[in-house]
Image 1: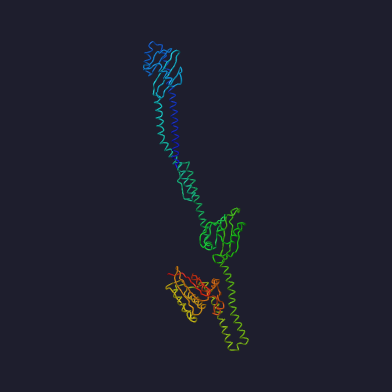
Image 2: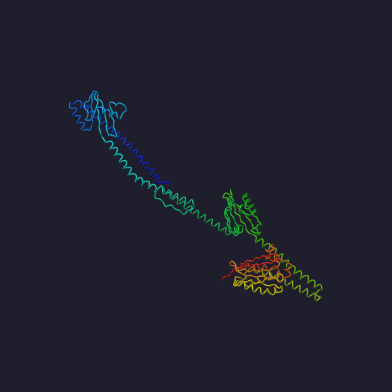
Length: 570
């Protein structure tokens, strides 16, 4: 592509060359006409002089002198008779030469000029006399050549000046426009840091200043927009509720981390219509209702997230324009109230379970006490049996109250004194405590303990956890069974696994065994003296240690309880 400078130079050069050619042609044509007129006038005057000499007696002598002094070839005729003719020429030669540049016969008063041969021929009649003059002159050619020479010289002189003029125009006007154009492209692409060096040319100075002001304004506007967006994103990302923004076209603009973790497994959401992003039909219904009514919509919904059922307080709020004439977007907020619902249900279950657990021993104590008062105390054997039962039920109440108080203290977690604990050693010590109970059922322990695995915990509470799990494994295992205990390191975590060959747990009960007062085998648990709080205490202790507890079980084949605690290296 030819640059503007070259285009302008070519155009101006062509214009000047054509103009000078036309001027040169006009000048040469004017000079030729003027010279021919001048030659004709001179020859006409000379013809008059010759005609005047015709009356002189020495006419021929005078003609020869005149011919020599004025460089003429002369023919003078009278009544078709030759009075004088220049040497070497015949009368018919003059007429022939004159008629060479005309069509047909020549006139009585003719002038012809041969530019190529540089010869002027003039014929004039005076009554019965005719005078022919022939004059050779290169003056016209010299003038034409000189004119073209000066025209060419002027043109050659002007060309460098023209080049510098074009260069100046390009540098002063075109180049600044190119710079502004380039800067405008950068601004259009989002590079607002670009600046144009200000020009000294008055015509382009304002353009440069305006472009720089525009760039600064756009940069300030973009910085402010980025700041506002960062603030908005920071606020959204730190909102504990799952939040999503939808524009007026229904496209998802942004979703905070809480939403991504709860509903999209932590993966980013592509910019798509909310129908393809939101899975809950109830939330979609609420969005459509908010758009239709242009009013906030709030409901408490039960939703399935992955494999869990959760409760959310859902609010869908339309974002209206300043004049509230149209919707500019939708804000969807899903506040997880599962824990509140769970706590509320736990409170109800807790009151019901405590009432139930206390009602049974209290009823037994009251019944046996009334029986004794009715006369059974007079029978020694009956008295001793009833008193033993009353003592046993009282112990159950005491144990229940003690475990409730223990669970309350664990939930507060204020009295725990954390220290470095050797997990394999603590597991081994716990097995020693439970071993007498296992011997009664001829249960063997298979210990697979890696050495030197340390965690940050309270030693007594960690031992309590191990003893509780080991005791459950013994209580729910048949005679002559085997209990496998493992400790190992995996992914920076200390793992403790207790594997039994007991009755197992149904799949629908594995999620509830850590609830308070929940028993897999209720009759057997009561016979063994269990309160249903052991696994709840275990779960709370492990959570205080920032760990996790899992269970895998199959009915009739046994259960595996797995504890995960972060390894303590220092």
